[in-house]
Image 1: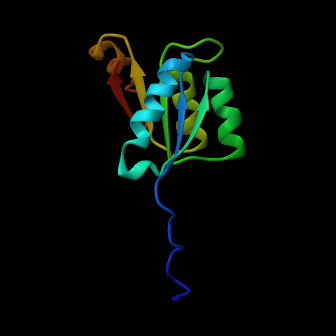
Image 2: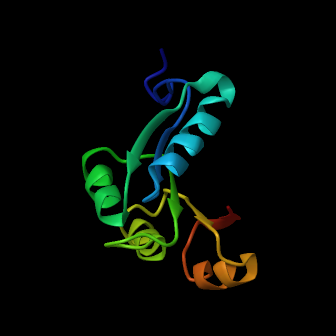
Length: 116
């Protein structure tokens, strides 16, 4: 093996799903497991604070977060992820009007908005 070659990546990605609705987290988990043979490693959190605690113990490749949640909303979480984990993209999911959500998320780096 070439010493300069990066280590082989295991199949799938580490994904953190953040939503205060347990049914929505389960739905997103099922959707993610249906892609690429379901090899993704999925963590879950019920709000932004839980998500930050999960990230501190196990960084991930992608954060998928609801916008409206108790304790810490998804926009605050997205800002903190962008500051502390700049290589981790954030996908915001929201029931807000798409234009409003995109406008609120525009200040975040590596963010996209997906309407629920």
